Image (cartoon, rainbow, N blue to C red; front, side, top):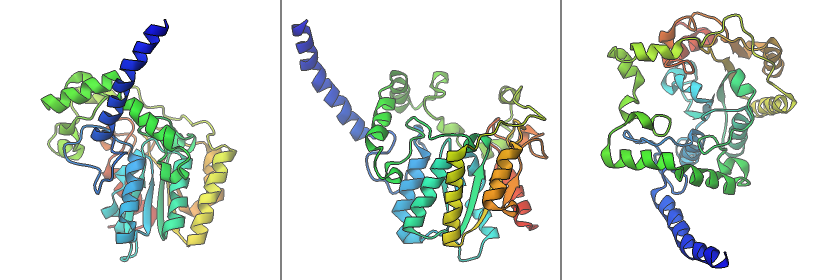
Length: 322
């Protein structure tokens, strides 16, 4: 047994070091090296959106001096900067500071970071009952960037990414696509399909809502349903801390509760909490059944709504007819 363990150590250690070197050189999730730009047209590996937006902000904040921010999960991607700018002072410099998954803690960490490093004149918080009820998510696509956690999570952060890369299913898809440049059915949920990245273009061409894709929406609506209460004491305190930063920065802000396709209404108790913290005049509840959630054409799938929906929401919030 001792001889066996000796051989395992003798041959296993060099192989383990080789794996680490391989991971560092390839940097598949772009968390090792510095990048001026994190996204390229032919990217096929999903990366931590919260990390990307954080590092991009750090890279550019002293150049552009951002003062207006959109916060939220991936659903906030429907709110485009070029549209939001129509409702802000002409001098505003906007940045989309979102993350995948999303949580109150994630938004708070970003707002706290901005408060230390810049100004916050305008803010748009895009939330839903899932974000409001979520603790920090685990996994390489969701972990809080170390710089936002004062580097307390740096070891765990990089271990999650290293472990994700050396998942055998991911490795197979990664190198198969890298060598063949062909996206195959088994690669779904492992890597992205670059050929299907521009959903709006596919919708314009009439290619998106085919018979197979429409099935994604089936059985996903629950009209007259109300979400359970999700804002606990800890998250309520974070929301209050966010409001304190807004007060310090004299921020103009609005809170959007997303119109999810499932038509589940935000719990009235949670809605009242948001009213109490941010003021009823600044909170806009679009959850439940409404003019958008009755038509699947307003959604890419059962989770994400399209920019045309967000544009209409902004007109309502800012009470303007553009």
